[in-house]
Length: 266
Ligand code: BGC
Image (cartoon, rainbow, N blue to C red):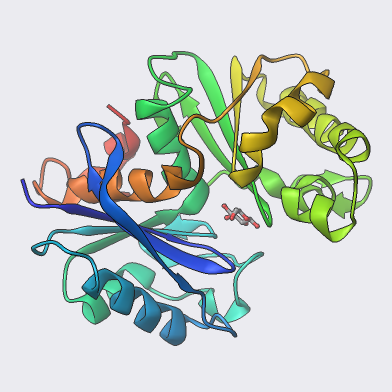
Protein backbone atom coordinates (compact mmCIF):
# COMPACT_ATOMS: atom_id res chain seq x y z
CA UNK A 1 0.00 0.00 0.00
CA UNK A 2 1.24 3.49 -0.74
CA UNK A 3 2.26 5.55 2.24
CA UNK A 4 -0.31 7.70 3.96
CA UNK A 5 0.98 11.05 5.02
CA UNK A 6 -0.27 12.86 8.10
CA UNK A 7 0.37 16.52 8.82
CA UNK A 8 -0.46 18.41 12.01
CA UNK A 9 -0.43 22.18 11.70
CA UNK A 10 0.02 23.92 15.02
CA UNK A 11 0.66 27.44 16.19
CA UNK A 12 4.39 26.91 16.59
CA UNK A 13 5.22 23.91 14.42
CA UNK A 14 4.11 21.97 11.36
CA UNK A 15 4.72 18.27 11.99
CA UNK A 16 4.44 15.47 9.47
CA UNK A 17 5.15 11.79 9.09
CA UNK A 18 4.36 8.68 7.10
CA UNK A 19 1.62 6.76 8.87
CA UNK A 20 1.34 3.01 9.21
CA UNK A 21 -2.44 2.65 9.22
CA UNK A 22 -2.30 -0.89 10.56
CA UNK A 23 -0.26 -0.06 13.65
CA UNK A 24 -1.32 3.54 14.15
CA UNK A 25 2.26 4.64 14.31
CA UNK A 26 4.77 6.54 12.24
CA UNK A 27 7.07 4.81 9.81
CA UNK A 28 10.41 6.52 10.19
CA UNK A 29 11.05 9.96 11.50
CA UNK A 30 8.62 12.71 12.31
CA UNK A 31 9.62 15.94 10.54
CA UNK A 32 8.90 19.39 11.87
CA UNK A 33 9.35 22.96 10.69
CA UNK A 34 8.45 26.15 12.47
CA UNK A 35 5.07 27.57 11.53
CA UNK A 36 5.73 30.72 9.49
CA UNK A 37 4.79 33.97 11.20
CA UNK A 38 2.41 35.49 10.44
CA UNK A 39 0.73 32.13 9.80
CA UNK A 40 -1.18 33.28 6.73
CA UNK A 41 -2.51 30.61 4.35
CA UNK A 42 0.02 31.06 1.52
CA UNK A 43 3.03 30.81 3.85
CA UNK A 44 1.67 27.84 5.81
CA UNK A 45 0.69 25.98 2.65
CA UNK A 46 4.15 26.55 1.16
CA UNK A 47 5.88 25.37 4.36
CA UNK A 48 3.65 22.29 4.46
CA UNK A 49 4.48 21.44 0.84
CA UNK A 50 8.16 21.69 1.75
CA UNK A 51 7.78 19.37 4.74
CA UNK A 52 5.86 16.80 2.73
CA UNK A 53 8.42 16.91 -0.09
CA UNK A 54 11.07 16.00 2.48
CA UNK A 55 9.36 12.79 3.56
CA UNK A 56 10.97 9.60 2.28
CA UNK A 57 8.17 7.87 0.41
CA UNK A 58 6.54 7.42 -2.95
CA UNK A 59 3.57 9.72 -3.36
CA UNK A 60 0.41 8.87 -1.48
CA UNK A 61 -2.52 10.94 -0.27
CA UNK A 62 -2.10 13.48 2.48
CA UNK A 63 -4.30 14.23 5.50
CA UNK A 64 -3.83 17.61 7.14
CA UNK A 65 -5.11 18.67 10.56
CA UNK A 66 -5.62 22.40 11.01
CA UNK A 67 -6.65 24.22 14.19
CA UNK A 68 -10.08 25.34 13.05
CA UNK A 69 -13.41 23.88 11.96
CA UNK A 70 -13.45 22.58 8.38
CA UNK A 71 -16.64 22.30 6.39
CA UNK A 72 -16.36 20.82 2.91
CA UNK A 73 -12.60 21.45 2.88
CA UNK A 74 -13.05 25.14 3.79
CA UNK A 75 -11.86 26.72 7.06
CA UNK A 76 -14.85 28.36 8.72
CA UNK A 77 -13.42 29.95 11.88
CA UNK A 78 -10.00 30.90 13.20
CA UNK A 79 -9.57 31.31 16.95
CA UNK A 80 -6.03 30.00 17.05
CA UNK A 81 -4.79 30.69 13.54
CA UNK A 82 -4.54 33.81 11.42
CA UNK A 83 -7.96 35.29 10.66
CA UNK A 84 -7.16 35.30 6.93
CA UNK A 85 -7.79 31.52 6.96
CA UNK A 86 -11.54 32.04 7.24
CA UNK A 87 -13.21 31.04 3.99
CA UNK A 88 -10.03 29.56 2.54
CA UNK A 89 -10.61 26.37 0.48
CA UNK A 90 -7.78 24.66 2.31
CA UNK A 91 -8.14 21.19 0.79
CA UNK A 92 -7.88 22.66 -2.69
CA UNK A 93 -4.93 24.92 -1.84
CA UNK A 94 -2.92 22.16 -0.16
CA UNK A 95 -3.64 19.68 -2.98
CA UNK A 96 -2.43 22.16 -5.57
CA UNK A 97 0.74 23.11 -3.69
CA UNK A 98 1.63 19.55 -2.70
CA UNK A 99 0.65 18.01 -6.02
CA UNK A 100 -1.22 15.13 -4.39
CA UNK A 101 -4.77 14.68 -3.19
CA UNK A 102 -5.17 16.20 0.27
CA UNK A 103 -7.95 15.98 2.81
CA UNK A 104 -8.17 18.61 5.52
CA UNK A 105 -9.79 18.15 8.92
CA UNK A 106 -9.85 19.79 12.32
CA UNK A 107 -6.69 19.05 14.33
CA UNK A 108 -8.54 17.78 17.41
CA UNK A 109 -10.75 15.57 15.24
CA UNK A 110 -7.56 14.09 13.76
CA UNK A 111 -6.09 13.41 17.20
CA UNK A 112 -9.40 11.96 18.34
CA UNK A 113 -9.60 9.58 15.38
CA UNK A 114 -6.15 8.19 16.26
CA UNK A 115 -6.97 7.94 19.96
CA UNK A 116 -10.21 6.06 19.27
CA UNK A 117 -8.60 3.66 16.85
CA UNK A 118 -5.30 2.98 18.60
CA UNK A 119 -5.23 4.76 21.93
CA UNK A 120 -7.23 5.28 25.09
CA UNK A 121 -10.57 5.07 23.24
CA UNK A 122 -9.89 1.81 21.46
CA UNK A 123 -12.98 -0.40 21.54
CA UNK A 124 -14.89 2.04 23.72
CA UNK A 125 -18.56 2.45 22.84
CA UNK A 126 -20.99 5.11 24.01
CA UNK A 127 -20.12 8.80 24.01
CA UNK A 128 -16.42 9.59 24.17
CA UNK A 129 -15.06 13.11 24.27
CA UNK A 130 -11.42 13.67 23.36
CA UNK A 131 -10.08 17.05 24.46
CA UNK A 132 -6.71 18.32 23.31
CA UNK A 133 -5.14 20.71 25.79
CA UNK A 134 -2.59 22.89 24.03
CA UNK A 135 -2.50 26.56 23.07
CA UNK A 136 -6.26 26.22 22.82
CA UNK A 137 -8.70 23.47 23.70
CA UNK A 138 -9.73 21.22 20.83
CA UNK A 139 -12.57 18.71 21.02
CA UNK A 140 -13.51 15.54 19.17
CA UNK A 141 -16.82 13.90 20.01
CA UNK A 142 -17.58 10.24 19.23
CA UNK A 143 -20.74 8.24 19.55
CA UNK A 144 -20.10 4.49 19.30
CA UNK A 145 -16.87 5.28 17.51
CA UNK A 146 -18.41 7.64 14.97
CA UNK A 147 -17.06 11.18 14.95
CA UNK A 148 -19.31 14.21 15.09
CA UNK A 149 -16.91 16.57 13.33
CA UNK A 150 -16.09 20.17 14.20
CA UNK A 151 -17.36 20.39 17.74
CA UNK A 152 -15.69 23.51 19.11
CA UNK A 153 -16.11 22.87 22.80
CA UNK A 154 -13.03 24.87 23.72
CA UNK A 155 -15.11 27.95 23.10
CA UNK A 156 -17.79 27.42 25.69
CA UNK A 157 -18.09 30.59 27.75
CA UNK A 158 -17.16 30.29 31.42
CA UNK A 159 -17.37 33.28 33.76
CA UNK A 160 -17.75 35.51 30.71
CA UNK A 161 -14.59 34.20 29.03
CA UNK A 162 -13.79 31.79 26.25
CA UNK A 163 -13.01 28.54 28.13
CA UNK A 164 -9.73 27.89 26.34
CA UNK A 165 -8.39 31.23 27.56
CA UNK A 166 -8.82 29.99 31.14
CA UNK A 167 -8.31 26.26 31.07
CA UNK A 168 -5.95 25.31 28.19
CA UNK A 169 -2.36 24.23 28.78
CA UNK A 170 -1.35 27.49 27.08
CA UNK A 171 -3.35 29.50 29.62
CA UNK A 172 -1.54 27.70 32.45
CA UNK A 173 1.88 28.56 31.01
CA UNK A 174 0.91 32.12 30.10
CA UNK A 175 -0.33 32.83 33.58
CA UNK A 176 2.45 30.89 35.32
CA UNK A 177 -0.05 28.77 37.25
CA UNK A 178 0.94 25.80 39.41
CA UNK A 179 -0.83 22.47 38.84
CA UNK A 180 -2.82 23.10 42.02
CA UNK A 181 -4.02 26.49 40.74
CA UNK A 182 -4.73 25.36 37.19
CA UNK A 183 -6.45 22.02 37.86
CA UNK A 184 -9.59 23.67 39.36
CA UNK A 185 -9.94 25.80 36.21
CA UNK A 186 -9.78 22.68 34.05
CA UNK A 187 -12.13 20.94 36.46
CA UNK A 188 -14.69 23.74 36.24
CA UNK A 189 -14.53 23.46 32.47
CA UNK A 190 -15.01 19.68 32.58
CA UNK A 191 -18.02 20.06 34.86
CA UNK A 192 -19.58 22.48 32.38
CA UNK A 193 -18.86 20.27 29.38
CA UNK A 194 -20.30 17.33 31.28
CA UNK A 195 -23.56 19.19 31.83
CA UNK A 196 -23.84 19.71 28.08
CA UNK A 197 -22.60 16.38 26.69
CA UNK A 198 -22.73 13.74 29.50
CA UNK A 199 -19.91 11.67 28.00
CA UNK A 200 -19.16 8.12 29.13
CA UNK A 201 -15.44 8.80 28.91
CA UNK A 202 -13.21 11.85 28.58
CA UNK A 203 -9.73 11.47 27.08
CA UNK A 204 -7.31 14.31 27.71
CA UNK A 205 -4.67 14.79 25.01
CA UNK A 206 -2.04 17.32 24.04
CA UNK A 207 1.56 17.46 25.21
CA UNK A 208 0.40 18.10 28.77
CA UNK A 209 -1.14 14.60 28.97
CA UNK A 210 2.40 13.37 29.72
CA UNK A 211 2.02 15.10 33.08
CA UNK A 212 -1.45 13.68 33.73
CA UNK A 213 -0.46 12.44 37.19
CA UNK A 214 0.01 16.08 38.24
CA UNK A 215 -3.54 17.16 37.50
CA UNK A 216 -5.93 14.26 36.73
CA UNK A 217 -6.07 13.16 40.41
CA UNK A 218 -7.22 16.70 41.29
CA UNK A 219 -10.24 16.56 38.96
CA UNK A 220 -13.71 16.00 40.41
CA UNK A 221 -15.88 16.00 37.27
CA UNK A 222 -18.29 13.06 36.99
CA UNK A 223 -17.13 11.11 33.90
CA UNK A 224 -14.09 8.84 33.93
CA UNK A 225 -11.13 10.92 32.75
CA UNK A 226 -8.00 9.32 31.28
CA UNK A 227 -4.91 10.68 29.56
CA UNK A 228 -4.45 10.10 25.84
CA UNK A 229 -2.18 7.23 24.88
CA UNK A 230 -0.73 8.48 21.60
CA UNK A 231 0.54 11.79 22.93
CA UNK A 232 2.15 14.12 20.42
CA UNK A 233 1.79 11.91 17.40
CA UNK A 234 -1.98 11.51 17.58
CA UNK A 235 -2.65 14.47 15.28
CA UNK A 236 -0.33 13.17 12.57
CA UNK A 237 -1.57 9.59 12.82
CA UNK A 238 -5.24 10.61 12.74
CA UNK A 239 -4.71 12.90 9.75
CA UNK A 240 -2.92 10.07 7.95
CA UNK A 241 -5.77 7.66 8.75
CA UNK A 242 -8.23 10.14 7.29
CA UNK A 243 -6.11 10.36 4.12
CA UNK A 244 -6.87 6.68 3.58
CA UNK A 245 -10.30 7.87 2.47
CA UNK A 246 -8.66 9.19 -0.70
CA UNK A 247 -7.17 5.83 -1.65
CA UNK A 248 -10.36 4.13 -2.57
CA UNK A 249 -12.94 6.52 -3.97
CA UNK A 250 -15.86 6.63 -4.19
CA UNK A 251 -16.62 4.17 -1.35
CA UNK A 252 -14.38 5.99 1.06
CA UNK A 253 -14.99 9.44 -0.39
CA UNK A 254 -17.66 10.16 2.18
CA UNK A 255 -15.08 9.65 4.89
CA UNK A 256 -13.20 12.66 3.58
CA UNK A 257 -15.89 14.78 5.12
CA UNK A 258 -18.51 15.03 2.42
CA UNK A 259 -21.31 12.90 3.69
CA UNK A 260 -23.10 11.74 6.76
CA UNK A 261 -21.51 8.29 6.75
CA UNK A 262 -18.35 10.21 6.67
CA UNK A 263 -16.73 9.91 9.94
CA UNK A 264 -16.78 6.30 10.95
CA UNK A 265 -13.55 5.51 12.71
CA UNK A 266 -13.61 1.86 11.96
C1 BGC B 1 -9.91 25.94 17.63
C2 BGC B 1 -10.19 24.49 17.34
C3 BGC B 1 -8.91 23.69 17.55
C4 BGC B 1 -8.33 23.94 18.92
C5 BGC B 1 -7.02 23.22 19.14
C6 BGC B 1 -9.34 26.08 19.02
O1 BGC B 1 -9.08 27.42 19.29
O2 BGC B 1 -11.11 26.71 17.53
O3 BGC B 1 -10.66 24.32 16.04
O4 BGC B 1 -9.19 22.33 17.39
O5 BGC B 1 -8.12 25.33 19.12
O6 BGC B 1 -6.05 23.59 18.22
